[in-house]
Every structure is written in structure tokens, then in C-alpha cells.
Length: 359
Ligand SMILES: Cc1ncc(COP(=O)(O)O)c(C=O)c1O
Image 1 (cartoon, rainbow, N blue to C red):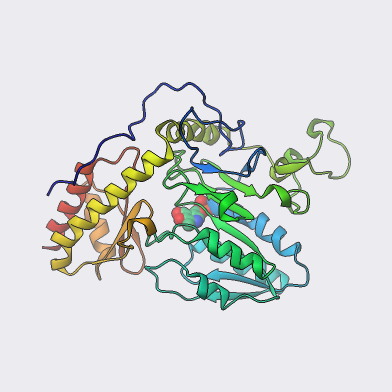
Image 2: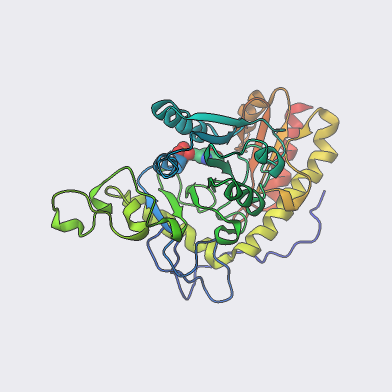
């Protein structure tokens, strides 16, 4: 089965004219001419900082700060199907501060809907934490509509971008995000050990305070003076010595994303995941698999989950054949089809081997 028409416009070459970007907070903004950045912080400001914490363990400080900034409010809204780190961080915060957690209990294969969130919002909610792209199903949440509902209730919205950044366009300004966190080791190609990033909407940078007061966030760091005075703006969210090896890796990884252009990456992601779904329907559905991802490409990120009761065992056996998916409990085989370097023949081979294991 061949993929339907596709032009390889997302190929990354090794030459670039401008390498500056803000996604790691280490350069000023400006992708190569004509290319959109992988994500867009508030215009004209350095909207993001890296963290020495990996991935969304970096959400601890912004979540703590956001709830402190709404002192009369005692509730946080989150998703029962959220990635474990986000749940555990917020459970820890709630138990240490006596806050309530309000859980969205949605259909796992669908993203959270505005209606479900509105039903949980009132004047007691300080913060809503959600993934932009669901880690298991790849469902894309409507960031703009949900953030607007959150703001309507006077709360703040924190978005986890782990499965969005570098895979689909993310516009945090239009999306109304107050805070965003994410890892750089997936679609930004930094690999394990590369740092988290944090975005704080520019209007909030003067009011939200980093609860972890380290010397990298201190005004006039090398004066090593008494007491903590935060650096102005996003730099106050830096804490300690960054993981320099990981920063170097993600600098190059993010440069490749910028050079290829997020629109081309997105187009290839839609085509790759669409092809995986065609193969699933033709080969795997008759063998007892079901699709765990949205069929509508506009609602789907760059991975596809295939559900089967023996997903754990099948994943282990697939890895033995040289195809490396992720098992995501309870029953999903997640195929991460990173558009920069995944070929259509890789999708064909992976799903063909899976079919061979089930038959
Ligand atoms: C949605 C989401 N959030 C967070 C993380 C990871 O967090 P950490 O890097 O802290 O392990 C992942 C990892 O896969 C994820 O999928």
C-alpha cells in the first residue's frame, strides 16, 4: 500500500542563514526568512527560559507561583488522563498547600472539550493545567477557546507543550496561554537530558515569582550579594547552572526544526499519521486493533495510537524486530512519527511487522 501523493518539502539541509530563536531562551527571535518559528512567544519579548529540570517536572515552579498569585482561590483543574508527571506535581502541590483538585474525566481518545472544562470552573479555581496534544491519543485541545473560558472564570491556563512543540504550530499569544512548559527531547531533537522550557506571558512576568530562588535568576548574579532580588522578566525563572551538553544538543535540534519550517513539518506529520491510519484500517483493524487517535487530521498531532488488548507484549516483540514504539497503558501502542526524519517506508515497515506479530 503506497502513501497518497506527498512532496518531501520538509527535508532539513545543513545550511542556514540565521540561527537565532527564542524557544530555548538562548537566542533572540528570528527564524530564517519565510519560515514560521516552531512556536511563537509574546511578540517582542523573550517569552521563554530553559530550566534545569527535564520536561514538565519544570511545571512545579510555575504551578506553585500561579496558585500563589490567586490567594483566595483553592482549586486546580486537571485531566484524569493527563501525563503522570503533571498529575503528580499537582497532587504534591495540592497536598502541601491544602488545595483541591478538580478532575476532567473525558473520553481518553478525545481532547478535553471547552464544555467539560467550563463545567468545573468557578471563582474558586486558580489554575487549569492541560496538555495541548494528548500524550497517548495525540488529540489536540482547542487552546484558544479553553484559555478564554479559563480567563472568563478569572483563573490562569498552563499548557504542556511536550507533544506539540516542533510537531505542530503553536501560537501561545493567540492561544491565550498564561504559562507553558515542555520538553525539548522529543520533536526539538535534544535527546534525553536536554532541558525543559518555560513560557510566561509577558504581562505576568512582573507579578508571578519563581519560588525557586537560585543565583542564575538573581539580578547582578556575579555580585553574589545578600538577599534575593529577581532579574526582571523571564530571566528570573532561571535557577542554577544549566545542563550545557543538553542545551548544545537542543540548539542544533531546534535549528533544524526552524530551518525545515513548522508548516512543512506539520504537513508531513498529517500525511504520515494519515498513512498510518490507512494501514491500520486495511491491515490491523481486521485483526482486532482499534484506532486510539482522532481521525480528523486537524485534531491530531504527530503520533498515532493503535489499541490492542496485548499492546504491552506486542510492543516488546516489535522492539525485538527493530521497530521501537512506546507502550502506553493500558492498551496503546504509540507510534511517534517525528516528521523531520520518519519516512513513509518506515511507517509501512513498522505496521507490516506489527501485522506479522498479531496474525
Ligand atoms: C505530556 C508530557 N508531559 C511531560 C512529559 C515528561 O516529563 P519529564 O521530562 O519531566 O519526564 C512527557 C514525557 O513523555 C509528556 O508526554
